[in-house]
Image 1 (spheres, rainbow, N blue to C red):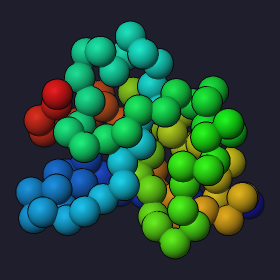
Image 2: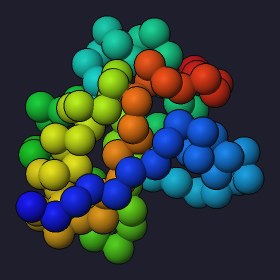
Image 3: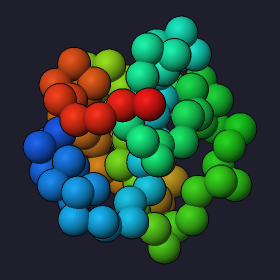
Length: 101
């Protein structure tokens, strides 16, 4: 199995502060995102990823986020196997110190 690319919460925050246009996808459940999401992230629950494949573009890279990086890691493996460019935010929202909305 091919290794998944990762990004730390600090690296992600620097990219966002620099104004980079990133494709962020939060795969947590509804009640989890109600407590706050990274601004600009799209919410697609982990269980809904397979029925939302048409949202993803194989020419773009997507950064996946969950609470601790376990579920987002699973999503990354699944999508990478389908030919998508993915990156997992290690540590998840537990490690995120930046802004949320």
